[in-house]
Length: 202
Image 1 (cartoon, rainbow, N blue to C red):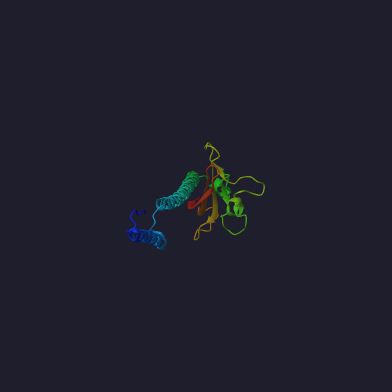
Image 2 (cartoon, one colour):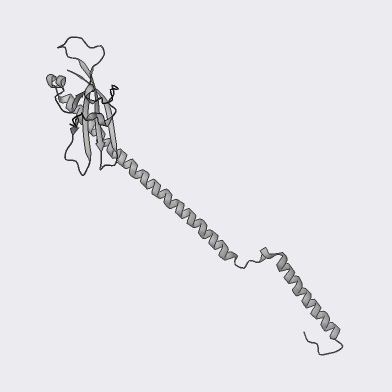
């Protein structure tokens, strides 16, 4: 500030002091309230929003990938299940249509077995896929051919013997209990075994 009159020198100094006081007060207010300075806040907020959106997008992508894998696995399971069920149904139909008593008694069809033939661990149960193969490596199941790719379908029936309460006569027809098994494996993506019970008199 410049004052040209000598008599007004004191007034000039007073005005200068007041101006300096205002500037000092403004500086103190900025020092005391730094959070009120909003310069750069938009950039920070934008970065925070970007980070949050990136995390949400990554999580959604992982969830989508997991759900797709679950859907594929479920579809494979359903395909193998229906494949194995069709094998068991086919074996039951073949057993139902076979009225040759001698063949049934002697278990002539390769897919028709006695329990002792397939009970590898001697637990009177047919719960092991490996038990369907005898010690010489010959298959004791029937195979369905003309399947696409490396899809396999096998079936077998196990004669568990006469049902309880049957007549004792040797030549008297008796009701036999059977366990029928269908084994499905589509494209090597997991094996499903379907087991059903069946009764037939011969």
